[in-house]
Length: 82
Image (cartoon, rainbow, N blue to C red):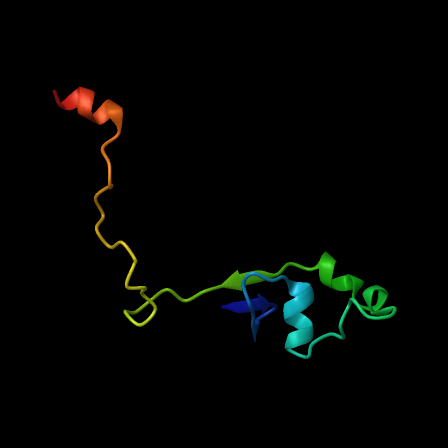
């Protein structure tokens, strides 16, 4: 998982948030210590994006469903096909 902001890519953890991922990456001091929250208030006013590359077979879970057919047939489909 990556955290993106203004072209920079930082490692990120999910579950988590920018207020835990940015200190872990060394970008900001821990906002939960002392008066650091005031110093890093800008973080909440910026746009952040979490991204995950799902391409390739290495990222696939053995439990992932790859069959495009639904596991069940909606009631309206059964009625229409009779």
